[in-house]
Length: 454
Image 1 (cartoon, one colour):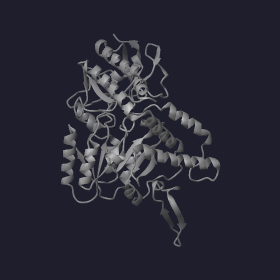
Image 2 (cartoon, one colour):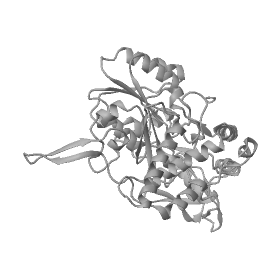
Image 3 (cartoon, one colour):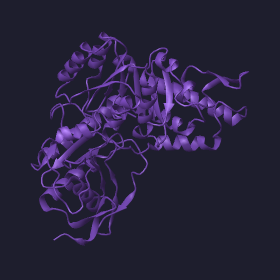
Image 4 (cartoon, rainbow, N blue to C red):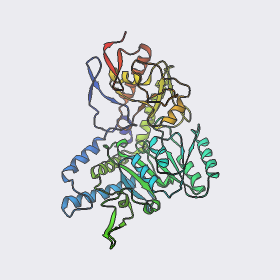
């Protein structure tokens, strides 16, 4: 694919021609603008999986042809992911279920007592596993610039006790889409003898990621955000802590030998390497889908994909800036670099109501809520109050807390220009004219009623 072609056209994805019903009974092509939650699968990925499906067999277990083929495909997929991430010599690729699974695996593998650092801006998947695993955690307040983030982390490390230390940081915010200063934070960490794990769930689908250049110690991401179907993820990086830890799961595949002892107990020798943490029959189709997506994105060329996405981000930001009632949420400022993820609120609207109207009246799918990043969204919303609505369904709040929510629009390599343009038109019309239909709360969801508004 040439640069000129990829700048003009999105990569083919499943669902691009799906028709969805509107409140008025008509149907319209679905505008999928919720890539940050789950991206549609690339057509290339689906075709590759379909071509392999008849040859599906057990992995690492069987002597038959299909088992041997599946084992080769599984291990080749591991090599493909390693190349995609530009891993260092000796780094491992461990296949998991998703980013959340990857980071929980690592939380159980770090040495006991490791001091963990995380900014309050993290997604819950990278904010919560550490304390859950019984590790001491220092939560750093939301910084308002790259320099402030690096300085706050440096100060925290300077005052930290001796012993192993780990920073968990996102590459791109799942709320604002803003890029984080990963390389600078990693240099700071290594200067203090600390390590870094990068949550690349939102970064890897949009930007080339080189573990070698960033020098992070581990990286985690999910297939379902990288244009592959649900069910597989990756944890990749340094082997020492992973090989020294107890296996993530106890079972077949993770064991080298299992023997009965004279006293009736069972003695186990565990594998080192990725197999140590991949017990059970692996998700070979999910793993192959991730590898297929890695190949497709690499062949399309990240320079071209990033340039096209920057153009769409600029179009979206400029369009929303023309609507006074819209406030875009930013951590590092309106001009900060970001991937195709942007959250906002609309004055006078409950975000759940507004999102429901985008769906029911325009066939546009976005997300509303706190996006599994409650501390960050609450910080960004500040004193904003959730507007009342007949069907407002913001995230539950604790007693005494204000009820808040926002709207998130997100897109990527499979998004046509028309979807962004339709979204901007819909926002302008809803702000100017209001919703054409009444809405009600149904099972916690905001849905269009059978009556027109007014």
